[in-house]
Image (tube, rainbow, N blue to C red; front, side, top):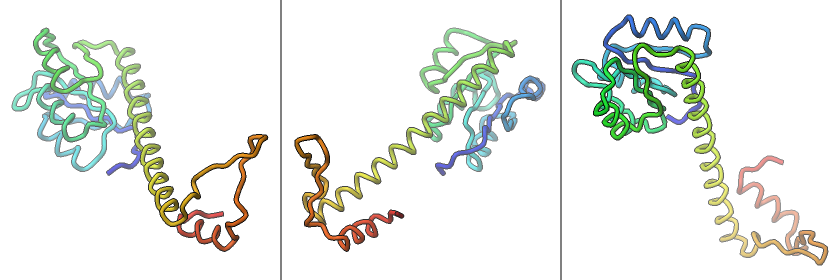
Amino acid sequence: METKEANDILLVDDESNVISAIMRGLDDEPYRLTGSTGGKEALQLMEKRTFKVVISDEKMPGMDGAEFLSVVKQLYPETVRIMLTGHASVEATMRAVNKGEIYRFFTKPWNETELKLALRSAVEKYDLEYENRRLLRTVEHQSQELRFLELNYPGISELRRDQDGGIVIDTEVTEEEIQNIIASCNVDR
């Protein structure tokens, strides 16, 4: 399910007026916002769609925010997690940080500007990590192709240089062999 998504953000709070207030505050931002009134419902939404960021309240009936964010971390580790609470105790904060590895922690009432900046930073973090994962897959794929080529054409991956530092290509490789190599790599010229 690793596809680059829109800037989807999931808001989880048992108080629908809090979700509405956050949505109004972010109305001018480039996000697709979805609200959920509980952790179980939010996890069901996450099964169907990728969210870059999740903002969760701490005190909720059923599944509290720390537990919810811990499950999100386990099931969707790439999703950036933010905690929002009206009951900021040191214990709740530490539990949320330790269990859910949250990115930021906000207390109610929140500062709208700080929340906007944190969301921009969280989306940027998600996008950078997504790009890193994509590049890593590309490098792994290229490494496999190189091993395949080296297995079928021993010495092909060795670079030899002349006295001026230029790369020397052995003339023993025919144009037909080059075409076969290119074809086996699925590379377009």
